[in-house]
Length: 347
Image 1 (cartoon, rainbow, N blue to C red):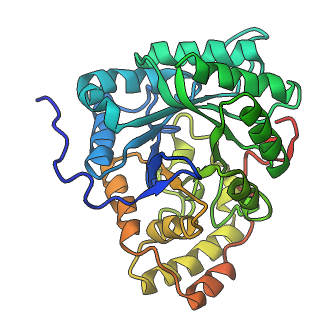
Image 2: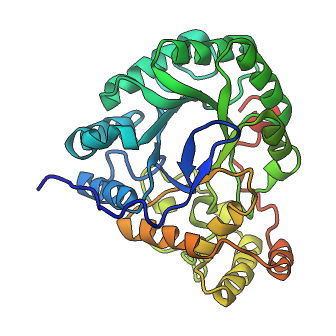
């Protein structure tokens, strides 16, 4: 049966302006980092995407190397887009990124060269069967490529009509300011930054949010649930269906599930209960508490998780007492896999 989107899909979702731009993003966006490669049944992927869109999630976020294997998330999304979502293209924000290793040889090992970025974008468009993406990101800062070259490639993508907007991911505050200045000079302003951020990874609070505010850029945070650590999944041990036990799940490391982290999560879970929320819902609401954060990216292995996460929008307000209690347990947990590029270092 052909897919028909829910009529009331815009009734519950909140939408926020992305920095000083005229573009609005849903408060929750769907990331296809995990569970959209070839190891996940296509029907499951379809159900997740349909559920998300039916709940007002209009933004789907991909990257060239999402899978496994690399590229398969874009290929699978492209098929599902053709079969289900093509009539709704103008209601969707689709993004992709390039910056990490992707294909053999010196030109496919990632970074910020013009050759790599523009070739990668062409490959992504072909895999997804799209004429353009709404946002094309430099996926990481590359100290081996001149910033002007990387930003010049993003500007070319916009000027060629292959992307409507440009973004960056995992850049430091200092390099974000420089990148924004360069893109203004190229008349292709940066729309958005995508950093990692969660209760166990608060690095953006030091300088980056101030930089984004002053530059007029939006912020879409990824891994706000710390790859599932900030849920009730691990409160009593590691279940067999955990990401850590699935193909492509090696980004969740055993150290992330340290007893110290889990002790903090258990305490946070008690705070969530007093708010009438699940641990995941409170973690998402907390990530969205700063108005400079436009959207939070969620992932899902089944559609029910999308529905639960959207429930976070029912209670986004925090009392000062709740925030103080959360601060007592929202501590650095060693979960930031992207720390080096976001501090101007090689991965």
